[in-house]
Image 1 (cartoon, rainbow, N blue to C red):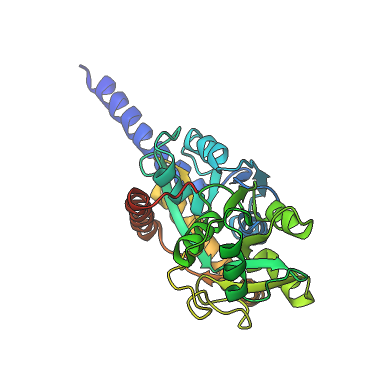
Image 2 (cartoon, rainbow, N blue to C red; image 1 turned 120 degrees about the vertical axis):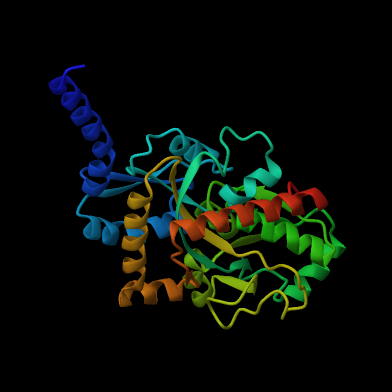
Length: 319
């Protein structure tokens, strides 16, 4: 092989190796999509739309939010899992993403292997709400009514596998009552069902419930963990311990997305959430900011998935 030929081959190889690094350093150069697996009005949708303008300003590119709702949050996750690992398609994961392996053994993707983690954005309490004119005014009164009418009271959730679903399952289990689960495509439609009288109670978040509770339209009977409105007691304080599942929101991209891209997105999100106006808004909604690094979020994802797979072996989470 002649020296000119050898030099040409080495130059080509060097160019090929440098191309991915160049692409990473240039990211982003076009519009970024945030895929929300829920209908408008729920916690995931609200979170994405709060973050999008600030992240867009930080990254210098348009960030659009696309709702791809279904009752199990699988369609949006599958879309992202099969997208190119170039940082332009982002998945907003709620609890269903982390919980689905415990109730659906045949998902069209692997929750661990088919995604690259970006950050765990935040967590927040799940709140049990009833209409203001409902006869049961406290958690104790609701439990008594449920025991008197087994299998007749219904609870709405933001979807199968969501924190709002599992909170209802744990409440029924810990209180020794029989409730009927009615899943919706997000917390927004679930709240609508409560207000229209289609369900007895709704497990939702302060993001969609604070104004209604403050206005006296609905009663907040209990919350799963501390956070949000101080006037709403925790389940443990209201007499039913063990109902401690929190809502979480994380960001993921397709497996193989470079760490440099994921870190830059995570840093942009952390900066936006730390801005005073945003921080106050998140606090009012009961959110606790986490903003973990991609590496930390990988560990968090594995921990949550494994925890609920083990719980699913002991109790029926499909109730």
